[in-house]
Amino acid sequence: MKISQITFTRFLAAIAIVISHFNKDMFVYKTDYISNIFLKANVGVSYFFILSGFIMIVAYHKKVKIEYFEYYKNRFARIYPLYVVGLLLYLVTRYSNFSLIDSFLYLFGLQSWIPGKAMILNFPGWSISVEFLFYLIFPVLYNYFYSKKNKSIWVAGIVLWMITQVFSHLYEASPSYKGPHTESHEFLYYFPLMHISEFLVGNLAGLFFVNHFRQKNYDIPVILIFAAVMLSLIFVPLFYHNGLMAVLFIPLILFISWNNGLLTRLLALKPLEYLGEASYAIYITHIPILYILREVLKWQDYKPDINRVFWIYMVVLIITSIIFYQFIEKPLRDYLKKVNLR
Image (cartoon, rainbow, N blue to C red; front, side, top):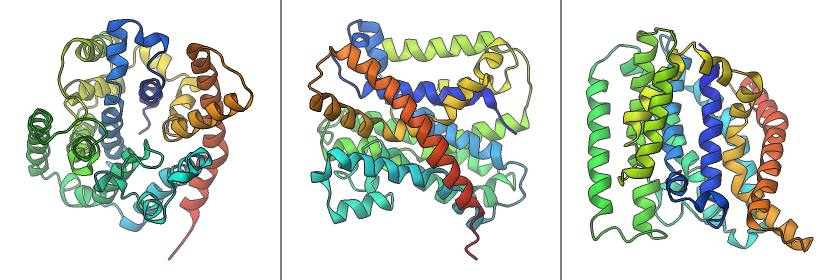
């Protein structure tokens, strides 16, 4: 089952994160309400995690059992090549950050497990470190719970999500939390177990979707829920990073996936779907591309205003990401999937 209309939403989430990591002097931060959205755009990673759990179920729901080796090989082929490309690009301008220990942690996707290490090298990779955990446990969850229609996983997933939200809010308000750029911050924001509930509720949403497929025109609900997401980020001062927005993201994903209205025909346009496919390259390379672009502009002694730099950056990022997707991600993914190691 392919849901073309959901793919472009990954591009929108990736671009929101890109903007949130750019210079805070740019034009989108000059208007209070709009700036609130992008200051909290790290919630886009939460969307990725929930959507990842959803897509895993949609992709595998007809299987009686997932074969472990084949699954791990396919997941490795899907995300690891560009993950390494992002690391190598980062070291082009930040080679002084290189150390053997840190390189070992990042190559094996372990950096997010150790507070203080998640932001040393290509820092968007912290979320890929978390995804490695999701991919590790998914076949076990599927083979022992989802495929057997074991209802206990529903209780466990929802309870774990609720515990995560309560703990995250209490921890952020406690003296133990020391603020940004501290180990306590990395523990709260990047530690993999803080995010596992997002993947699990995404799985549950996927199960609900395939068991209650009801395609019809849901344009209005999609627009209203998207507006609710924006209004929440603007006006409701809560801690959204560890999955609280699932209460809106899951209905949004479900209605977009069920929808056959005008919005679906728009979102499923091939150019938009293609941008969605290239969104992983955008996300995992956007920081090193920004650093390299800054060095090139400095070398050329070109000093445009920050807004013009942003548009140059967006053009360069999207073009390079399409190249990475077309000539690195897709070919290596297809080649590695065909490799028989047994």
